[in-house]
Length: 473
Ligand code: CS2
Image (cartoon, rainbow, N blue to C red; front, side, top):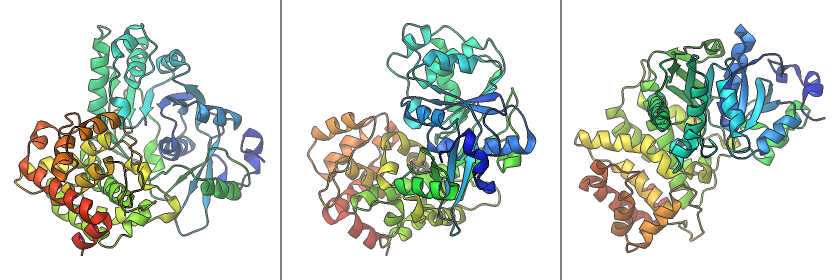
């Protein structure tokens, strides 16, 4: 049996979709139909609609690959979410909140029309950090000389075509200050068309959190077993989920609070805590783990000394500059994060988290470094993590095995590295010189440079495993 409209009533009761495909009209266009959206915002939205109603079906837009669109069409827009690592029996839930599908690279004008549709009141995004970089031909994409395939062009052209109808653009990517950031990107993009951002469009910030790895063959098998039906595109996720949303929606919104989301006037404390405690630690595990030959995040966490290092980073370097939300402490939050990272069933690969370091590190690590330096502190552990990223960028593990550098700046990185001697000083200077990543205040900071060189030397000479064992003892 295949998952689809005709099989939905044969699923176990607890796995049936709360909203049946076609039952609600679209109210949201979502750009980025990856696993994370399907296991996070889509699940909240389906629960909200089931609890409180509203035409908040989601038109899912795949930016580049159309594979997911084709697979979902074959399943009448149904897919399932498998929750793993709860210590209980596998729980799987089919989700029916998708109310349309589109492929931006294949049909950009169709996506612009979807954004412009007056029934749409929210455009949300999970397109990863790098998609917010304006493309070289942005002006042509906005003025109509080239198809609007980039995220800023799709948003700008869609907004123009709405003629002022109220809209909320909801960025769900891990960027610091994600609302204002996307707002200025869209405003700058509109300038290319000689237009201004209408004041009927809001850009609230939001903090999203759920670990959703790439789906493995094992996840697919377990989802099918629990569903009693084959799903070509299930997503696996941890039991934990959190969504904090700045409540500013001129065109209305689903009752996400009924689904467990936190609606607030200020997301900043949540966002900063999550980026600096969770995501920074994730990247540290990814680079150090990959160097030490560990395949999974859960394996990296088991390196002797690793939890000691991470706890010290949280206590000594994240805590001093962060005001966590009321009732929360950085160390308490960090302890929960470490338990979540130990979830082996997720099968979350170090190489997946290691991707796109140049786009991620400024948001998750460099704010901590800057704040520490402003307070006269020394970024010891943050320096280790940066050194691990730099050592990773050399392209091979401690064993000599090749490591892929999957990053939009990979060729710039290789170029910079080839121009310097392959020494701790050379590599550090070359990579601190990437102006898109390091602001001048950090690139020229001698204390930071000293820390990075010191750790890089140790990683180079003794390897990540020995360095961590000694540092975390
Ligand atoms: C991870 C995040 O891939 C990464 O860089 O740090 O995707 C992380 O799993 C999520 O932010 C958790 O909410």
